[in-house]
Image (tube, rainbow, N blue to C red; front, side):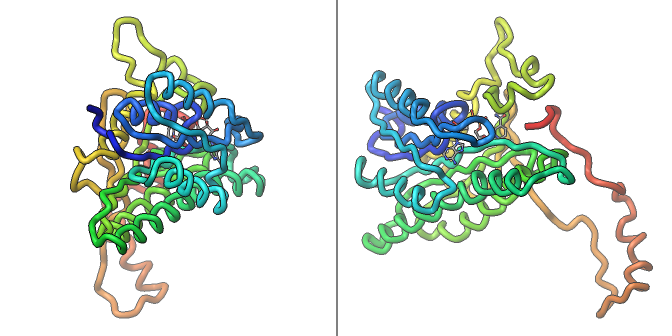
Length: 308
Ligand SMILES: NC(=O)c1ccc[n+]([C@@H]2O[C@H](COP(=O)([O-])OP(=O)(O)OC[C@H]3O[C@@H](n4cnc5c(N)ncnc54)[C@H](O)[C@@H]3O)[C@@H](O)[C@H]2O)c1
């Protein structure tokens, strides 16, 4: 008996890295998995169905059910076809794990239009497009049955987006957008019986192995738990995708090594309500008090690893 027996899952970007670990774990627990991956390089150039095919073959060899989808998550048409593939091949959809991603790091003053557009496309649109078609499918099902559909979306944000890593204006804007979108969609589709959460993973993959200092930090240490293996992240995603996390929605969870953190976003930290209408002089007058006790400059960058 697997925890996901009879369930159908889509995992995007599941040809390698963290997504492949999600797909393997969900399949080993009984889910039929649509393994989506465009298969390009780490910057999103090119396409190759081989990585997704290899993960599917591995799942099938272990006795599981899986199929390949080579579409791009940033294409509306491909995203619709991805959801339809789950329904046509496995009879429905219960779990959507949005994970596909790329990096094109550059300081903002040097960033090209293509670097901006591609990263926003793959991450932000690439999370929304499959979610949009999955939500439409679940809404139709809910209307037909009047029963909560008991489905889950797990998104992939990043602490880089939440804390603001220099050199990643494109990636951080997309990841912060994904965290906000998680909350919006959690509010919108809770009544259908769909929970929507996000993770901020830290794991050893091709995206991190090129970052100075990170490879050594994340390397498997002899005789110690392998805390930066992608499988360490997959366990949390499987929990969010299961009924074991009932009641949890609209949350953002960071997984780094042996630590799990529940993160919270923007909130008021100071307020002045003394004035009916603001003018420049009154703003200048109340501002010192408003900012009293709040350190100036940008907030400190919280994570202890670099350019992820
Ligand atoms: N590795 C980390 O420490 C870390 C930290 C924070 C966030 N993340 C996020 O985790 C997710 C997975 O990253 P990873 O480290 O496993 O990287 P990875 O490069 O190993 O895997 C990402 C996969 O996404 C696929 N992909 C890229 N563009 C696609 C598209 N348009 N359509 C379909 N598939 C596409 C790639 O082919 C690749 O197989 C990403 O969203 C990444 O931003 C990773």
